[in-house]
Length: 152
Image (cartoon, rainbow, N blue to C red; front, side, top):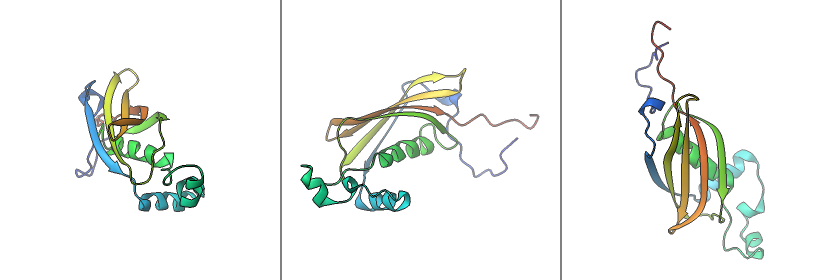
């Protein structure tokens, strides 16, 4: 089956990817994103939204929900590496430090393994704040599949 719409962008297939390939971006999670998440999920954890509550815990500002970090990771994979058509099949996310509202985060993605037998790519992600690693992740991704020919 061939794609009918020539405007559809497809990411890199497994044969186009290389171990050691990287992609980086910086992201600041602001109040707007946190409020959208809280509204969409009906999550009312005061750790994410209430300054009085977090100050009683000895924190300076609310914590970013883990799901937002996960969302940045998966959307980056789906947009950039490998790109559109990718399918995240497994995630291991490790939060080393709390991530706070308005923190400037650097996300560094690196392909560390390509398994052509299983059509899976392993991506390592380091998340940094002010030069300090605050989280990391290992993600298994099925890159976009090869376009099928007309004969199939």
